[in-house]
Length: 262
Image 1 (tube, one colour):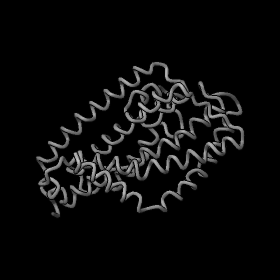
Image 2 (cartoon, rainbow, N blue to C red):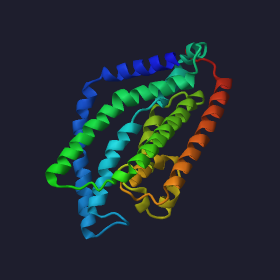
Image 3 (spheres, helix red, strand yellow):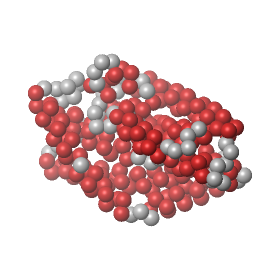
Image 4 (tube, rainbow, N blue to C red):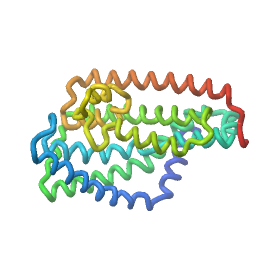
């Protein structure tokens, strides 16, 4: 166990080396302004679904903050290890390689995402107080909100892991990861609630694992999650399914691994 704790500590230290990244969050917060103005203009003509102007601004603001928890990616690192043959040196170590990447992931969350999230949250709360904007968060839903955040983080890690393990079959994947990152952001409900999408997309997307990254935690936070136990149970089901996919992909990938470049 101590070796995994050391990996987390080293990951945190590596993340803290790039202090300039925290300053970039000021621009991320400023970047929210055009999106908030857009929704204010759209909602002047009337509510969209269950969202009035105030609730939509809350959703967009929270999605910008929560998304920072899912900006950490280990998929590209795993894919690079496979492509460059570096995986060989890790396989002979007395440590589970996938667990190692989970520790790195946790370290990045603590050292990189959490400070950024806190910084932007403080900025948003300060601005909300100055302009008299009520975010409408429900204090009684804090525990449910935290449970869904944890589920979303685990789902995000497992999805990243699966994408990274595709490196056993792909030789060049940098463009692939950029495309997947953009698609995942939309599927998770970042910037636009999934339940206002047309053509049955809303019913489909809210039952995918991506919805647990942004959509479900926010719905819990604003007190609009109809069946909390169903949502939590479905999240656990997706975690189990993705974990099985990871194990199968890992085993099949190792069978065809030839240590290219190593």
